[in-house]
Image 1 (cartoon, rainbow, N blue to C red):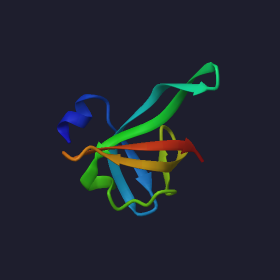
Image 2 (image 1 turned 90 degrees about the vertical axis):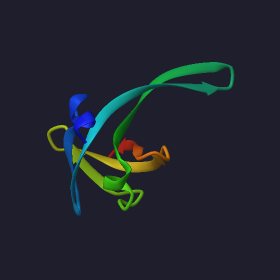
Image 3 (image 1 turned 30 degrees about the vertical axis):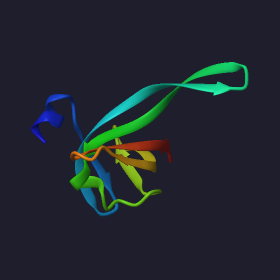
Length: 88
């Protein structure tokens, strides 16, 4: 937890509690036929033990009450998870 706070973790709230996570707008490149499109994907990095029971589709509130929906949960197998988000 201290390592998450050291890299800018913030409190995230959902309909069941709260946890600390690091928000990021990750750069992604999408290949569409013969064209490539640059975009950003909102995601949250958190301890797996804090987020493993939060269901896909749950709404998270962070960044001054901005709301995001969990699209996908990607645990790394060693205790950290990436939650792929979409604006709600």
